[in-house]
Structure formats: structure tokens, C-alpha cells
Image 1 (cartoon, helix red, strand yellow):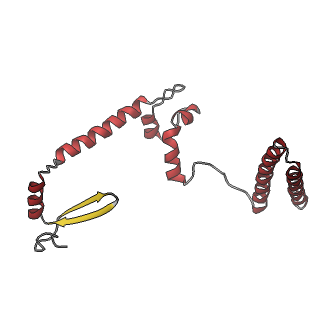
Image 2: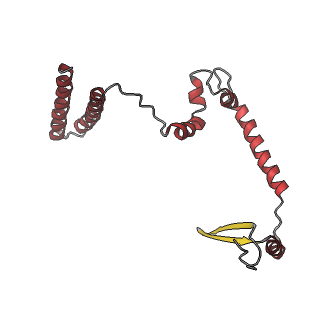
Image 3: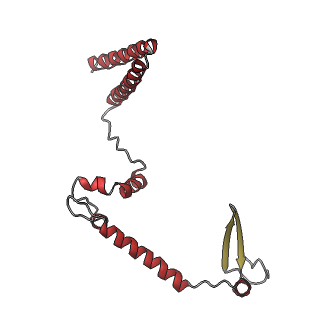
Length: 170
């Protein structure tokens, strides 16, 4: 790729600028980049950048070391090193940092477990539907919507009969 300004030398400096959501990329050779930098009076010091980056990460490490479980005394940094919690309270103490980690590793923050068979899965699914219908039923009764409540009650009975029927066939 050639320099966007002179069009003669290979571009070794690539700048990306985002203004009001619009991305503008500029590819420059070293000489044109130096001239452009002098024109804009922009000074970028890589040493300062690296110092700030390292400093920020050491501050984060200090912050993680100060976060400790009041029950067992394990720090978040200690958890990261060991990969194990010290006690059951650690889950609650470090929850804000653990949830994104679980989401990243497992794709979900809710453990559903394994189902031994299709039939058992169907039973669990029916039980979940029954629980949901019971919540709707309670709400309908509270709002005095008795026709809706009767309809929900009948649905619950039908689902419970399905579960009993399936258990009889096992």
C-alpha cells in the first residue's frame, strides 16, 4: 500500500480517526507522517503511553489485592492466581467480577445442568410451564379475573396429568 499523500513510498503509518461515528483511515509513509505531525504539532510519546498503561494495570492489581472476602480472607487476586474460591461467601463478594468471566467462558451466567434423558427433559419442561402457569393463576386471582384463573387451572391440571401419564409408562 502506497502513501495517501505522496503516492510514492510504502505506507508504514496507519491512522484511524473516528469523528461523529464516521471512520476515516489515512495511510502515510514515514516522511509524510513526520511532516503531518510537525504541521499538527502533535507529539506522541510512546514511553509516556507505556508508562501510563503499566501504571494503570499495576493500580488495577493493587485494587484487586485490596478486594478480600470478609469470611475467609481470600483476595480477588488470590482467586485469580489459584483459580479457586476460599469459601461460599467468595461467590457473593466477587460476583460483579465473576459474572462477566462466567459469561465469557460458558456463554451463560445461569447453570442449567445436564438432563439424563429426553423424557426427563420433557418432564422438567412441563414442570417449568406448570410453575409459570401457577404464577399467572395467582396473579389472575389477585386481579379477580376468575374466568382466566379457571382457564389457567385447567391447563395446569392437563399438564400434571401428562406428567403422571408419562411416569406410568416408564
